[in-house]
Amino acid sequence: MNAAPPASRPGPTPSPWRSLLGWGPYRGAHRVALRAGVSVLVPLLVLTLAGRLELTPYAAFGAFTSLYGRQHGRRQRAGMQVVAGGFLTVAVTLGVAASAAPGTRWLVVLLGALLGAAGSLASDAYRWHPPGPLFLVFAFAVCATVPAGLTTVPVAAGVAALSVLFSLVVSHLGGVARREPWGRPHLPSPHFADAWSAPGAATHLVRHVVALGVAGAVATAVGWVHPYWAMVAAVTVLSGPDLSSRLARGLQRVVGTLLGLAVAAPVLLWGPRGVVAVLVIVGLQVLTELVVGRNYAVALLFITPLALMMGQLVHPAPVRPLLEDRLLETVLGAAVGAVALLVVPDRRAGRVTG
Image (cartoon, rainbow, N blue to C red; front, top):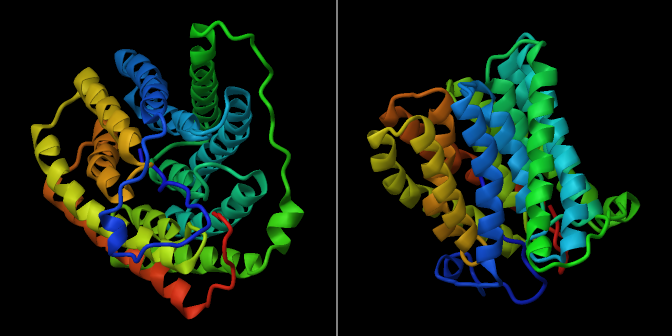
């Protein structure tokens, strides 16, 4: 999976270069890692054993639900996950529907850019943690580029929804173990008007459309196989409360991906398949969640092979072109996102945003 960078808090922001060496607090990361690991393991293992590998991407994106609300109480976390899981299911469904349309590659760029802006607004309105539309864009774009017919749409939606529900169950297991009384999820109230009227909010939404559109269009025109990697990298740069933190995340994305490819290469050359591949994916997911809140660049040592292994699970591809594509598209997306930030001055301060 492609984990989102940790949420930033208002206050002094270190320089982009110093952020590579920063190490945040632990904050019970093992609990998040355990929830994420179980949420990914069970659906992927069931589909693999059933011989339905083509459905594993939809289950994986539904399992992204487990990554929301990592520092919230159980009821608040469950409520945030209900909303985020609904959005993820919609993103998967739209992606599969788009895959059946003519001119899909260019349609993905257009709709992905618009979804990035809409997801950013929803993130601000619901105050998602982690913030931003990264998971929505990633889920939509991947599902849109996987060949599928219209008959696959309800199946994909069902698989994603079931994976979301399983993540919600996992989210409550800790309370069951502690014999806490069950409580209905505390659904967050959206504040779209506040999110839209915030200083610079409209400008930032335009940035999403432009940056994701340009990154995806260039990657598509060049003929790269995974143009959505450039779009995801651009989303990463646009997430954060201020210019410095956003540029820092872009730098972390590029440096972390470069180092992560060194980790990914031997794993991909080993080429695990089936159940073994699922276990490797789950292990990488757990390692990611243990460190993503502490240092995003370090987390990318595991995020990079994780994302590539998910693709190899369904559609194995030659390793060297895959590694090159990942690096080039990441650099492209991060560069486009940074240019978008620098060309349009940031007028917001002290506010976490998607």
